[in-house]
Length: 320
Ligand code: NCD
Image 1 (cartoon, rainbow, N blue to C red):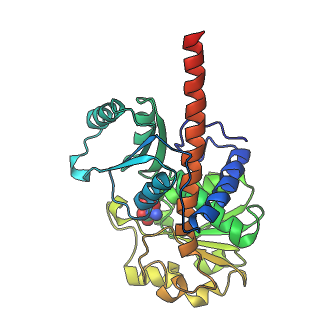
Image 2: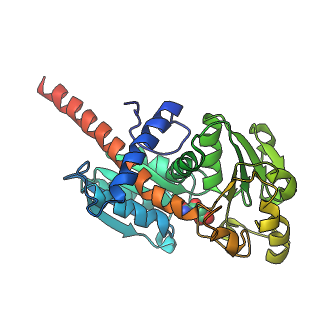
Image 3: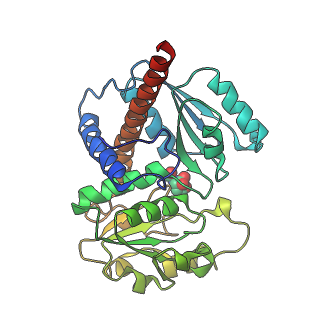
């Protein structure tokens, strides 16, 4: 089994073989989650703390379920954003929690890099559940599993990622993962919502959505992340939908069997037409949610194995 990571801070440090190992294990958890009795014991006796410094529905709920289904003691700490003060407060909080001996720490934070900083201070496994505009690795992994199941492969696909790319950690993690697996990536959106340096990322960039969608196998829509915008990035929501919103007419330009994805939360009528989102023949949005629990179980399981092995080596060293 190939999976060496101690923490999951981003997709960047994962090798393609580690990604495949993780997705294969997640497939097994998809089956477990469809049973009436969903318990497994991979985290038996372990403590998992979920620290969310930013709002979350899907991610927090699925990390909680994933930990519980694997037998961990799970504690949720929702930290109001207003009480977050960069630096000292974060590290103080981390040190306080560290003293309670958690084994797994799941962290979401509005600042890019905050989770990496925290990981350097604690002696448990840390999982990034989204940090600022930086990375959201479990989202990219659950998207990868959803794509692999729908398309039968995770290579040589044309994937169109559309909308607010600049503010999206989901886009960043997906770009890295899909790039590692040798797919063709197109970014579509208004130039104001493209990250700087996009021309050097080895992707194709389109302002015209109709052009960008042509022949795409996967259409991944993103939310306008208004909470990360500090000014006028788009003309109006109405105009935005007209140019970059996914509707039946634009989707008709993609491959006939193209799938539609969205990480949620969705703004219907802004980036996606509600009927497309609900079309069970095209939309895999609910599959993404289902895969989210399985992928998070696989992540927790693999990190717990590495943690146990590391502690075993330390203990053996102490005894010797
Ligand atoms: C995403 C996030 O928080 O980055 N949501 C999620 O995790 N499902 C995307 C978003 O907020 O738009």
